[in-house]
Length: 368
Figure 1 (tube, helix red, strand yellow):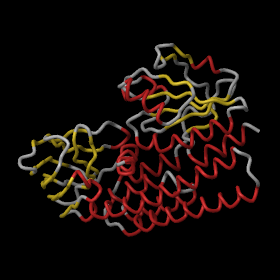
Figure 2 (cartoon, one colour):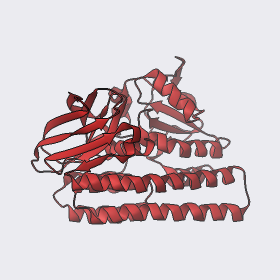
Figure 3 (cartoon, helix red, strand yellow):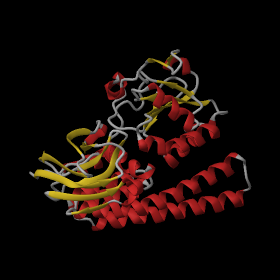
Figure 4 (cartoon, helix red, strand yellow):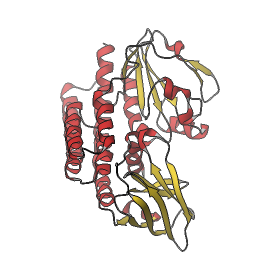
């Protein structure tokens, strides 16, 4: 379940659309052992916005049919209240048939959509490879935290790099071979997590050429490569928010320290996947005048606090519990999470959007 939802969350951050009329899109099929009788069809839109319910139906002897009128190719999901993204779909066909047994939900079958089937096959390989990469990253972080010998750290780093290369090769092969721009964009979004800037830049450039009429790949190119964060080098906008225990914390109270303001949410799968890296960086640099301030785009206090505990996020946390309606979204000018800004002791933003090795590299530069 975790990795399937990660994929959906990544798409919510980056988005997809195809500039042509698609007309009516139908999803029908059979679901066994469903967690509830109500099934939903949702559009997963561009830019981090919440999924949009476009149709719903009540299962009749396990069967259902859902319809929506679409103008663009993009990513959709069918699911339930408690399991919103059970099956991910691309509307490159007028009708998609789905067969799902919830007791074995990862092994669903789809017919009618070449891009949907290809993505499902990719997810299986991605889940296995990314899980192995996470293990290698955690091993390396543990050795570095324990100040292990150089030879052990070097071996662990080589193993991690090899695993990352294999994962990136898997993504590269899909991007180069797919004929679906929506699928291409989805996998490019996944690649932002593990590809270095040069490699990512090259494959995005190729995709822009390949799908020249597909505007959102060009937008991705601007977001990932060509767009500088507008608040970089400026004083971080002030704010005061409540903690889970209703204390009020101000950003100004962190003056004098380097602070990573980490925008995330309990429901955001990419955020939860990035959390182990933030935890590792916190422990690595916390004794060098550095800390983290978690700012959640949650709405549910219980889900927020449970995620803090489960992910071992032991730093200060605040939220206004307004999700995407939070004024901080426009104040800090971001449209997808996870997102962060690194603030220096004077309160100036010196970096943004730091993830995985990029976060470690930047912290290592400033916290010598």
